[in-house]
Image 1 (cartoon, helix red, strand yellow):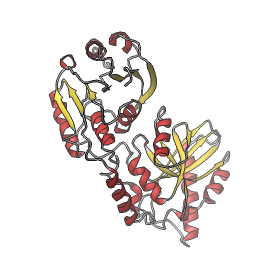
Image 2: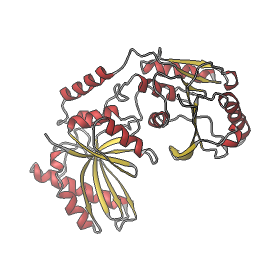
Image 3: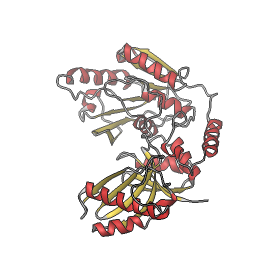
Image 4: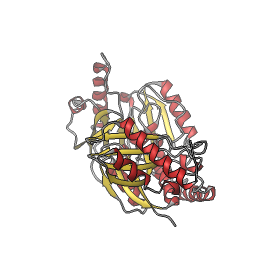
Amino acid sequence: MTTFNLIATCAAGVEALVGNELRDLGYEVQVENGRVRFEGTAKDIAKTNLWLRVADRVKIVVGEFEATTFDDLFEKTKALPWDDYIPMDGAFPISGKSVKSTLYSVPDVQRIVNKAVAEKIKETYFRRGMLPETGAKYPIEISLRKDHAMLTLDTTGDSLFKRGYRTEKGGAPLKENLAAALIALTTWYKDRPFVDPTCGSGTIPIEAALIGRNIAPGFNRSFLCEDWDWMSEDMWEEVRAEADEQADYDTELDILGFDIDGRMIEIAKRNALEAGLAHDIEFKQMQVADFTTDKDFGIMVANPPYGDRLGEDESVHKLYREIGEVFRPLNTWSKYIITSDLDFEKFYGERATKKRKLYNGAIRTDYFQYWGDRR
């Protein structure tokens, strides 16, 4: 059985979370900037695509080497076993990046890699002229960093954050894998109350419900490598059947998402319905100031507006004050708020127990963490 060198790519700041996910799935890992390395079979490629909540993609590392000339790049790329992965009619679009490398022209680097891969496939299949590239896609990335080349094949296709349940979204949506990361950084467990007071289109509560139910986040979507002839349909059915068996449909969840915008609440309900979680989450239109609870040891996770647009600061700071006034007195609750406003603590009314730098897309944010009394 073939074993592949694999990487799970991810946003800066969440590499350790992806490493933990992979360890929980049974893999030995090496955590690096923006990625986590591990090894696995074709079945493991399917399993990790299905189960990783925080990662962006699962890629096969076809080869790595040093390259300072185009001749180096061509010969060493051609020497790699592309014919083990790509059939004669396979399409292999090339993307690339170069950081602090002698070969700095990305278009030229892509062209050389394309030529080398094509030559290898033509030699294998005794072809002359152009390859048809009419079959399944095998996207290749050439990454050069300080003259070190890494050539990978993307197995995922659309990024793993695209779970398939978000039929509609609001003006500033949070990616599903970042929402999962925010929850993973809390002490929430499925027997505790969970509240998102600025839930928007419902992404954070839905991700919490998926975690609480132990539902594989990729269960209801497809992946690019399912079209590859060496990734069998039976294997994918087996991996999905195993995932279905692991789901917990019995535990009662206590998850609330509310928002002042009634239109967003309706969207959140439709998204939860699409995810099959409509009965696991209570969504309601409500302003933060009206929230009350007599429950203990709950978790609050919020992605409130950041006030990035001109004239929004005053209303956003008012919201931050309300969140503080309502949630700060809940001593047994732990509260977690992500925002790009570094003055958040001033308006919330308390210094965070801990802050963690994260990126919401290209936006640099802090995750303000207020830990409640322990059980």
